[in-house]
Amino acid sequence: MYRSHNCGELNASNINTEVTLAGWVQKSRDKGFMNWVDLRDRYGITQLIFDESRTDKTVFELAKTLGREFVIQVKGTVIEREAKNKNIPTGEIEILVSELTILNSALTPPFTIEDETDGGEDIRMKYRYLDIRRNPVKNSLLFRHKVAMEVRKYLSDLDFCEVETPYLIKSTPEGARDFVVPSRMNEGQFYALPQSPQTFKQLLMVGGMDKYFQIVKCFRDEDLRADRQPEFTQIDCEMAFVEQEDILNVFEGLTRHLLKEIKGIEVDKFPRITYDYAMKTYGNDKPDIRFGMKFGELNQFAQHKEFPVFNAAELVVGIAVPGAGNYTRKEIDGLIDWVKRPQVGASGMVYVKCNEDGTYKSSVDKFYDQDDLTNWAKATEANPGDMIFVLSGPANKTRAQLSALRMELAARLGLRNPEEFAPLWVVDFPLLELDEESGRYHAMHHPFTSPKPEDMALLETEPGKVRANAYDMVLNGNEIGGGSIRIHDKATQQLMFKYLGFTEEEAKAQFGFLMDAFQFGAPPHGGLAFGLDRLVAILGGQETIRDFIAFPKNNSGRDVMIDAPAAIDDAQLKELRIKIDTI
Image (cartoon, rainbow, N blue to C red; front, side, top):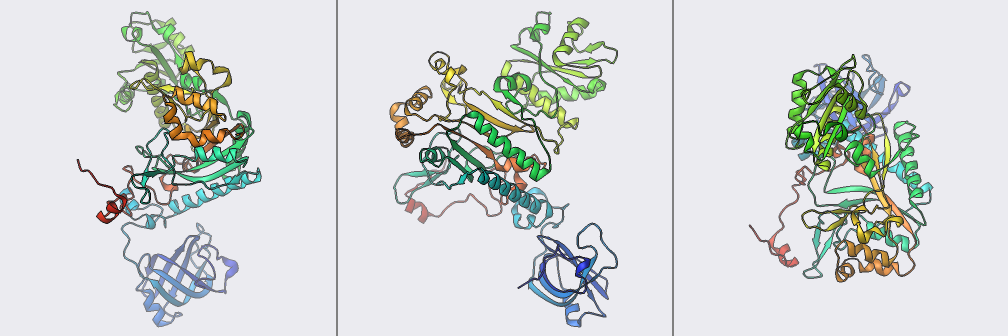
């Protein structure tokens, strides 16, 4: 064996023990007659000592040649360390080395392998295998493993069965672009990589598997951001003979289990709010409820008061920012500039200072008196010492702008504590949403989501008002999972395709296999998928998912370490019968 112990387990109880260790040289300190080397592996760091008076001369001289990240094996005796380091588990001991073997030399790494490194993100992505040696990345990957194991344990204990589904499938419309794979054996035809195992997990329910789960890779060819990758991992689940309440209870339980086992936190409440309430109260369908600043709609108090900006607006809406009444004019102007940025898109902002004496001072005092502003304060639940910020314009756009401001202010005020967890369910989503460009309705979730039975009649008259039997789990302002009760009969599924604009031929070509399956006794079923990458990042107190993925892509979808995607040679193109058109 290359080692008898790892570099994180030896302590004072091992003094006088002969040991063999192997790992990487973290750093060395050569004092001439004495040389100390920190040896690192996944488990920790152990200090080695090479003493001119006690170490074989050949070994002593060889130790002087060691560079950072050399891979070495040592044999020696555990001795008490004179200058103890209480910050590491092995800080009471060191190894008096008797034998040293260099297993592999190393170039000087392009950045320091330390918790606080001097390497920028681009260089660390290029040398990701070196970045993984650093504790922050290594620990993030170990944390991800722990979460995944707890998920498997919880679901397996509830009789869920893990089943693998194919990666090479047919292209089906699920809301994002597919990655496609040419088939050499089937000329001119392509597989698609799955955006989710959606139809397969439904077919498993038809097959009688009853409770399925899978921790599975999914693929979507869409623009990237901090919490999105072209390939991502889902905790994918489906259950037969269930209603919405059954599914919500199971995955509330999973979330409670993870928070308790991973974070040591007990969470009792999982509020449930409707999609409409979320949009009107927070301006988005994944609200962060760790703090207040709920929206107050002001149309009845702000319009018809000779202020043309508000009078012309579809919506006038504000939030009360706690303790912000002492903001300077410079700070207020800075926030006005912030909402005017193209990323937010507001044309301006009105503010009201809520003075400690109960009076108000606003940027629109010319048009509104103290009684008007008192009504604004009541609508936004503002208190003395707060500041009210007000936006106006088209309803959906204005809510999105105020939502962005709410989140920015919460971050500035330190209200988004990563160690505080506030889960909730958002329910009663619209079944369909209208694409204004095409004039066609699209499924807000996917085409297999069941409408609320009581809303079925509205499909003919007011399809935009039909609610879906769908639900999202939200944690700290992030959607971590979503699902629905599925359509399980052919007639309803055909009707859904009709309202989505599919012809009968198109529906059969795309999903004939599923509708055929429904004719052989499909049970009522539903499910949910959690985004594992995002869930792990939030539990780990981070906003971005990249450090919790071993080999992530950059914002252009490139793996700069292996230089992918890349061109393929002409012989491969010819074999696949593909020609590349250059523009």
